[in-house]
Image (cartoon, rainbow over all chains, first blue to last red; front, side, top):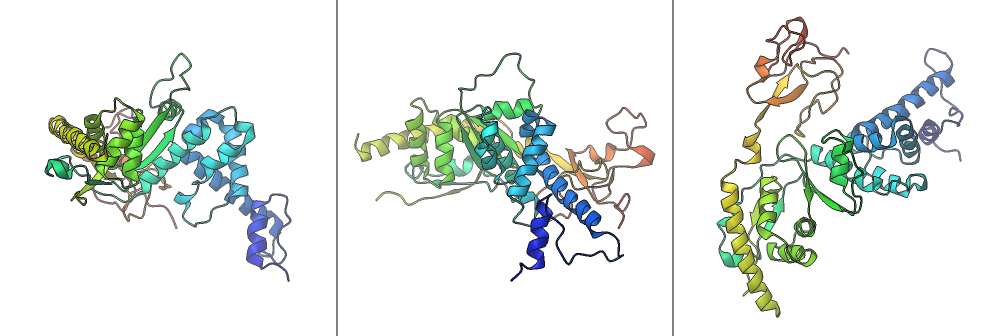
Length: 259
Length: 113
């Protein structure tokens, strides 16, 4: 049996060499091939533009022409699964990482993951951040078991490359340095939108492990240990100051205390 | 170290850390109040409006008309009404043809159709 028209229509839409699906005609009796070509072009262009708007640092790194070609290839391989355009691009970072012709830019996938985290944070639900006073009121013995519920916009991107610095350079947030930056220094990024603006906080070693433990819902005592395990000079007070002042904590939950 | 003594150690570290962090943060304003902003309607160029993530119809970058009346941009709190007050075209508060910024959605400059 032949494929249904919808199926043939959508696959012809993404393949520029495909003939227009049989059964398509124009209401005004004109040439359907021309109209279909216009529609096909609009679909591809609008999706490429969506990626271009969402991944400005990747675009700046690759240059307009190369970005367009890479994005178009992605659009054809992985068309949207949701009608909501703002969810399009979640798998773009992985797709970039899988491309052998872009292997010379080893941090590209992580940089794209940071840009996607910013998009997700941008569209996440609003919530009022908690203050550290909410934690300070707990008794000393209850602190280790307490859990910090994170703000709905919180995303953590861990990388062995300095992605926060690269992102800031490529998007004009900081001036392009005269010298090559040290690609060997990894940076983890805490992305959060406590108010209306998305903020990206670079995390030093130890802090990344601490925040990751919080993301997984670990009690504060375990998160502290995770931080110390990764960096023996882990600064617990600094870590708490960062997550609270960044607005990354939405609430404090009292955990089960040891008997 | 046994689990119990390790717990005791981390409890002590935590208690100190929370106290220090609370003291340090008490001295600085919270991020929300430090940079209060307001939604200002009718001032964004096409495609340059903001989005708050709540159920508002227009979302970031979706306005199609310059100074679209139902699209907003975040500005520093208290400055929205200044938009349109300047006649010097190079001033940041200049808006063409007598338009003014508004804290409420406007009926002007809506997309056709």
